[in-house]
Amino acid sequence: MARRVDRRERRELLADALMRLAAARGLEAVSLRHVAAEAGVSTGMVQHYFRTKDEMMVFALGMVMDRIRRRSQAVAAPAAPRELVRGLLLQVLPLDETRRLENHVVLAFLAYAAVKPSLASGLREAAAQMRGFLAEQLRAAGVDGVDPEQGAAGLLALVDGLGLQVLSQQYAAEDAAAALDAQLVLLFGRP
Amino acid sequence: MARRVDRRERRELLADALMRLAAARGLEAVSLRHVAAEAGVSTGMVQHYFRTKDEMMVFALGMVMDRIRRRSQAVAAPAAPRELVRGLLLQVLPLDETRRLENHVVLAFLAYAAVKPSLASGLREAAAQMRGFLAEQLRAAGVDGVDPEQGAAGLLALVDGLGLQVLSQQYAAEDAAAALDAQLVLLFGRP
Image (tube, rainbow over all chains, first blue to last red; front, side, top):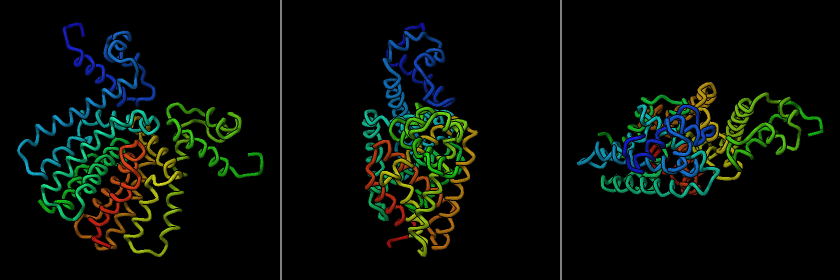
């Protein structure tokens, strides 16, 4: 990290190190010192960018959300509502190594937020935005078997639940993608 | 715990103490010593019943699964498939204090199993059983908009996801129950 990089980029490098550690052994045991070792920098350097582990977790979570958003926008630029929804939600499911890492961070963060209410607000906003986007697409597609807000809530919950099950090895990643498609058929009808 | 109780009952008392601690501050920080203090017994006594924290977590998880099963059987004895499914899944959602505690344990356990594959097998079996039961009910009800296995997987994922969102304060418990009902309408039609 000796070359000239901006603050955001350095923080992302450290957050990426945190994500690798979270995926390998969970967040409980991880300290700023471990992150420093994983990123190949000093603990003081880490502390320069993040004062606490909580601060780093909040940053990492925001980074994951941004990446998911950017990937799904790249995939589904001029698409119909159904494809927009599918494109976004496939970016959330842990279907490859990048998304597995992201899911680990989100899951660890959720488990943490369940006992640290102060961390929950950023999460709540991100989830509400996602639900709003999904509801808009259901409305645009004229889906009529379900109230769009509830359909959107169900879709997001289904994908969160599938992610949880894949990560904890209760369910295979391929089956998770198929279960999402089955839900899209229930909502939008056969493609 | 001085009166004559059997081994199972004592283990349940300790596992209940673990659940209260998990709900209050997560599982990361919890040790056998903390469980002993919460249950009002000595650490040696805890160690007599559980050699490790992992062993206690596996036991607590099994206990939660048993209780959910017993409650949903009590609720829905001679009922139609739709009511059986709803009765079971409402017992899983964190809609009261008991179920909140249970959800905390399951969530903490899932986050833990995501990085400890050796713990995942008991979980996988319990989830597969639940999915099998749900698929059977979808088949019995003649649900035809979706393959019963995939519909069952989607339902379980939706409820797992809703539980996760309620616990991490992303979503209100009442809204979660409504989102489940909306999914039942998608699957079974209007009641």
